[in-house]
Image (tube, rainbow, N blue to C red; front, side, top):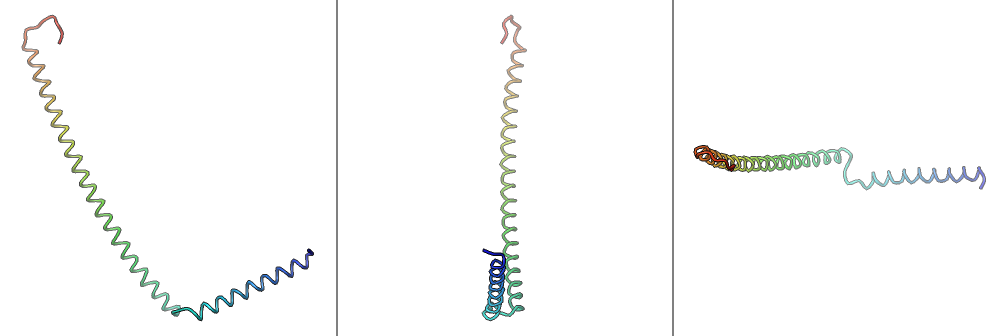
Length: 111
């Protein structure tokens, strides 16, 4: 293929591409259901509604997450209190055992 033939083919392709673009734009303008101003207005209304929906969902999720974190905090506090109480009982038992051992006469045998 010669250089001149490639140039001619490229020019033909570019012309076809430009013509197709022009025809497509014209058809789009003819078949558009609304004017540009109406379309922009509809897009604004839809985006505002979507923004409100997203904001509502974000608040809903935030509230659920806050409730879950509060529930978890309460569960942890309950478990901490259980562990603290069990530890205090054990310490009391150990203390009683040690006191009873110290009140006994000493012997040569360890525990």
